[in-house]
Length: 335
Image (cartoon, rainbow, N blue to C red; front, side):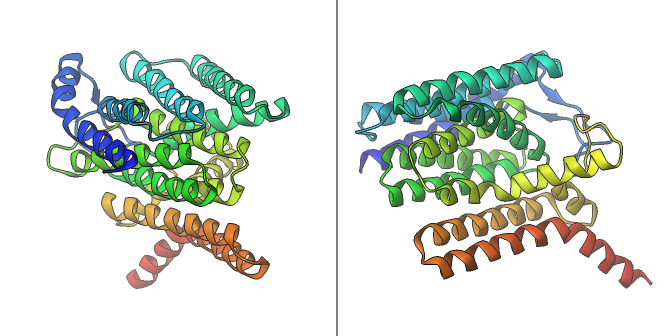
């Protein structure tokens, strides 16, 4: 087996097995998700299983170092892992004791500042990119957290984005990105049997923060390393579009954007009759489509890039419009 394959296997096995040890620990702590009117589930459910996924990421990152899976730019792989695990730690505190909006936002911005500053210094690029990196880390942590509302959606997102970033790493010659993508994909793929099986558990903030922080760190490091922006942004477009569209929609309706709600596009899809798994797969398929369009756009002549970008825009518009289209269709049948 190659070092990258060994890394993937170690990540998957640890993330798959760790929940057996983590679950009793969560039960003793009483980390239970109590459903409310804004929830997409109706039963008391154990949350915080992102702790096990974090152990998978930790194991995968350590294996990558021990097997020399990342021969160059090793610092970037470490920075990505550090951002992901640091984000997970912040999410764990949120799961256990809760944090005020001000403290949580400040901690996210500080994490983004430290990680981006370290990457900027290591790569010796302009410090003007520092604010962008800070906002990217904080923003995507929150996007991943907002979108973690139905079974399977985060696991599939981690798998899809990890696989696409792994491909981007291969195409751009950035081994650290290939390995970081593999670790992310393997860790979140291993969570799916636990989240979709009989004894369902939730990632909790520790898991959604891990996901958002890891993806954001890879995107920032990739951008600073000169990886094509199409590779980095395209897999994230559905999550970003859903989050941005929903926040703007709530703001225009005079609602407090930061309050808990269930008005995201993916949540409205469950309201029109889609199951959690169906919604998660749909979001994953749309993300895979936009991600593959990004690869085409970055590697094709201008006409191919233009066509790929047009498909991406069409996919985003269709996704955002789906709940309304399905509601009208259902209303038409009822008449």
